[in-house]
Image 1 (cartoon, helix red, strand yellow):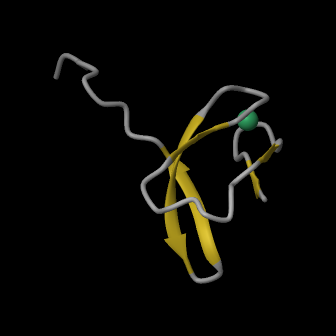
Image 2 (cartoon, rainbow, N blue to C red):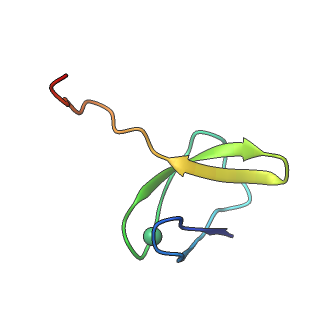
Length: 55
Ligand SMILES: [Zn+2]
């Protein structure tokens, strides 16, 4: 189980989840991408693809 950095809710990560998968917090709806870490999987904020920031 991984805790959401935004709201501290628990995000369920299936044991067969793989790196690169997108998980969504059930509480605040934030999306995270699964990454590999020393003790299994961790999360990082998901990249927003196709968003134009006008730079
Ligand atoms: Zn959350």
